[in-house]
Image 1 (cartoon, rainbow, N blue to C red):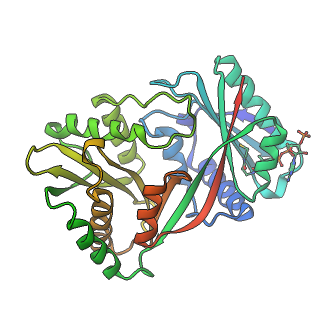
Image 2: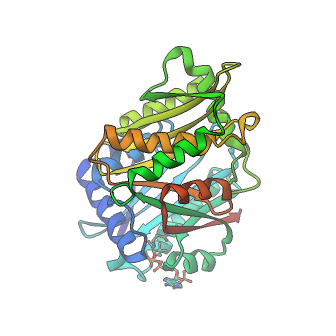
Image 3: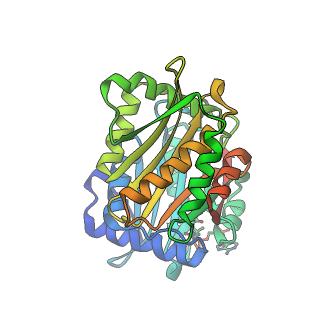
Length: 331
Ligand SMILES: CC(C)(COP(=O)(O)OP(=O)(O)OC[C@H]1O[C@@H](n2cnc3c(N)ncnc32)[C@H](O)[C@@H]1OP(=O)(O)O)[C@@H](O)C(=O)NCCC(=O)NCCS
């Protein structure tokens, strides 16, 4: 067994395919019924992340020629520069033989060398990773829950009915749609909409707010385009003042067009209480299923304490498919 640090920008598609196989086998063993990762999906995610930059460090473990595990360490650089996120994933065939521990220690010495004091990781509830992270001395933080909407199993009338219900409270607002990058004359408003996500529950009370500006928006949208994640947005605007009141975003995975992932849904504080979250999401579902009939599932991630958003997702027809336990250690 040997571990090699690989520059994500040098990663080739064969290795990415093998890493995707480790992901898929690992998730099958651990329970969560998540969409299968493909090599191109993983390759572009490692190279572009969510801000057009590669993951900070990547290690690949091989048994002979066979890729059996990976570890990543990501160091935020715009904000939260005291934090590091480390993830280790070992193929179920070779677990319990020390590979996970070796990768963990390798990643940790990198993180310590970079002077990061808050270490974050996580594992699926019901998988061995929870006990292993506790054994490694981390403490539990928040839980994230993935819910799935099976769009074929949910009658379209569900969303139509919820749309009409929400509209009854949101008559002062108009909805707009956008596919892909934000046009220049809307960038300032979009930056504000992204920043308004900062009062959603966070994984760590010590996290600073994400600082949004035009550069960050461009980096995010560029990364999603490079990862072949087409961004669909429904935005709400107040008719009287023209103020932007909220947005809901869906990332449609062109590599695996049967699955989409819900990105941010946010309503600006001054415009809450008008059922805009429900209105935008019901509109999105009616639109995306019409526009992309190949879509079968929409997955969404919520902090377990985000009761308002969870209630909306459940009314739309989503059900729980996986729960992730967050962990933290102070270095
Ligand atoms: C968690 C994971 C990385 C462990 O990989 P592994 O190769 O089996 O780990 P190791 O063999 O090095 O074992 C690591 C330690 O955990 C212990 N351990 C392993 N499996 C365990 C289990 N099911 N329950 C409790 N402890 C366990 C080992 O005894 C070892 O302890 P030690 O360091 O005191 O000797 C692997 O199960 C995995 O990939 N899970 C899915 C991804 C995940 O949950 N990652 C979480 C960490 S980021």
